[in-house]
Length: 119
Ligand code: HEC
Image 1 (cartoon, rainbow, N blue to C red):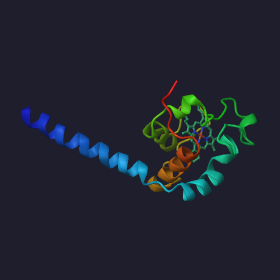
Image 2: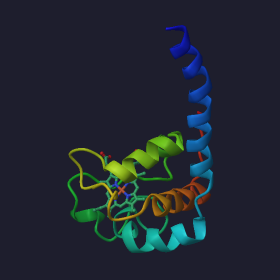
Image 3: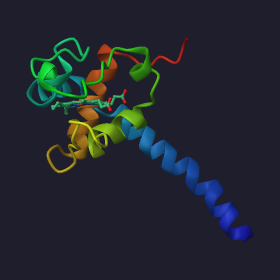
């Protein structure tokens, strides 16, 4: 039992730092191109959810500039990109984009709509 606690104390900070480092490593320039190819038609050029396909969707694309989206962590957004959002037109991009490409897109989103937990 004691060993498990000690192991967890060592490994949890290591895991989180690895995840965090990966999130930081995305390239926003590459991400921008990927966004334009894969996401723009729904989320729009300004990331505000007003892409050309948005009016045909029953559930509107998230406004990534909104406080609601900006207050979410990188990790939460990454899970949405990777796994999709259940019962919505937002399908998962795992398999379509590589892990690195998803980090690149995330990095682009964060460069335009930075993480903000105020208000
Ligand atoms: C077919 C339209 C469509 C495409 C293409 C699309 N999305 Fe989405 N996306 C949605 C919808 C709709 C939602 C909102 C789901 C909800 O509110 O339940 C969403 C939600 C999200 C969220 C969650 C936001 C939040 O605040 O929780 C992120 C992040 C996201 N999309 C990123 C992307 C990225 C990055 C791409 C391209 C790689 C992409 N989406 C492509 C329709 C789309």
